[in-house]
Length: 246
Image 1 (spheres, rainbow, N blue to C red):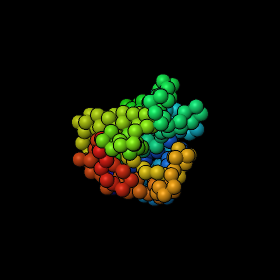
Image 2 (cartoon, rainbow, N blue to C red):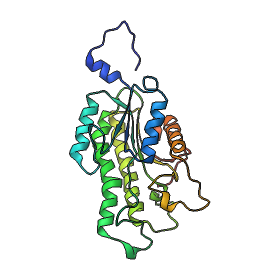
Image 3 (tube, helix red, strand yellow):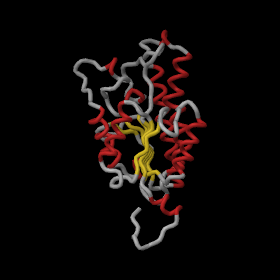
Image 4 (cartoon, helix red, strand yellow):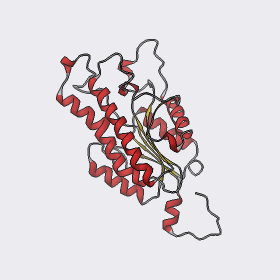
């Protein structure tokens, strides 16, 4: 929010006027998003770009609500957020791989996928949506996945990942309804980044599949976010700005 230099502002007004962008997650896409935002020029596009993760100060652990709440309080003391991007997620890991059949369904794998891909982002919405600016456009975006689309599911498999991302999409949709009541200019969306050259997708990048460098993926996602309007809140978009079916 611009203000005249000859007008004296109290500290609360200054904090409210600051334009802050927040990236949650320091993986391949998260790091690229933070770099792209900073390259746009802190002090120009945003007054500050904040990156939060398990190794940041303060630290944010997606599985620890207390750390999420503490980071939100810390951020709230700095000002209102105009952009919050949740770039977290899990597809595979030690003892965890996408299922090819229902015979491979495992309670621990399902619980881990939902904890990181749905419950964690839900808690981010709980604590960070109230930090979005009230008097101007602001955006909360979370990285979902096209395979989380129920309407687009024609191949089956990947039960835990698909279901947890579908749950995330519903959480976004539901939060957007409540958000609209207090912040009519705010936008809450789910984004499909496409296949990106990161550790998450590397084992599953098939020959002939278009794989994007993280820097390109970040540029495309930010371009989509820049073009969104209030009426787009609660929707699911891919990296080209196209709406995806639920």
